[in-house]
Length: 588
Image 1 (cartoon, rainbow, N blue to C red):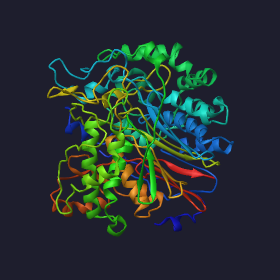
Image 2: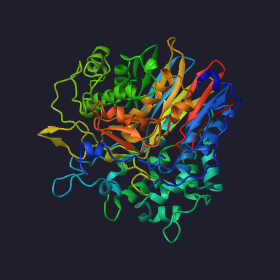
Image 3: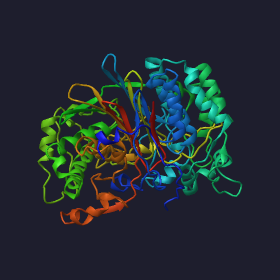
Image 4: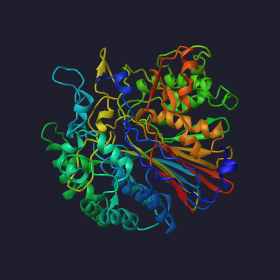
């Protein structure tokens, strides 16, 4: 469906009555091609939302409602982001929360300025490169590394929210926190998706606090529709509302975080009060590049998202995708572009405070076009090698695929035209499976580092080091038209698949002229420099034979994206929220 037709709808209508059912290590490629970070729980049929003055798109209706409440009260995009994230902590705890980290893009419409803020978690000061090696010197099993305190990084989400509110907020800090406090105290009902995630999770119930909150006495997940109240989280938020993030990064809450991490009975971590007190938000240079008549902007390292998306789009720019349309030929080029982008990502991208990342070289137009020349129209390369971008330093590095997992995304445009694209995470489903006394879960973000610190005597760029931020694939994205005007706000969860999800959504919007809902819902496909992956049960599945005839090794898999997209139109805004999750795009 095209934008011109969908924009005529008067309001957002979302079919949420559908009951969802749960669809039933080593470093390197096996880690990279880990299963979807959150289990598939079916789909909800939706149509695009429309609005004239402002719009929010978030992964849960209660979170989107909180954002709309704040915008209706005169709040800014930054104000709404606080409210949405804190409610997501309650209603979508498997994906994000104040125990995790996030990346945020902010567009200031009045001064035409894009700012990107890094709220990624950091490794504790005691962390060492061999953190995830067993006594035999081999990488730990992923699940053994995740569950417990060993995998927990210093959280950054809350400080990111405070910093963005300090810069761009309009309403009082306490006011934007109030919707989450109210919901925590009054309670909310367990949604079908949350129930499905809880039912499929095997380690969360081993944590006594999480077990008491999410599960019945017999170990079964609390049923759909059960009212959950979280007075502990309400108390945490009240303290933060009164004292700011100082209440989280020091004092009783900080002491409890440290005790929870270091006191795990079988897999303790080593976060200290000093680690929490030292955490800082980093402002990064945006990563921007041209795609046809558009300008695409995203987050720089330690996220690899924007670089890889730029590389994929730059390679695809050599093709007439509008003429090709969705199909096996486009999927061939998209997958080959993904292979080349992931080869570079795996070698070159890590925390720029520790590694000289050749960002400008990796997104250089001439370099990307030279990489496009490696793609054969007739035959898959199956496995790409990293290139030699300009401006790189002579560094002896070994590649690392890494394991990256779950997440949520928030897209917002306020009444002044300011926008936020924020991708936020606790890493795996329910993070480290540790709940604090303050009513929130802790991340397992440190497993985004390479488990193997060196290969063939060469250090891995994304190795564990004290104070380092693990590489990410999160790709919050803003799109600008040829006149520099904001056109779209896009992002998705999905671990390392985020890169493909976002790039595929962008070509769906820009080349195939889909409305945001159709673009979010379209079948996913691509490659992370391994097999070509096609999403089961979607349009993409039909392309298997044609791709195999070009030499692709094809895998049909679940691909649980959670795309939230907003597009500006002459009439206002059109939004889409991925039908694979429970979100909505709403506004006034």
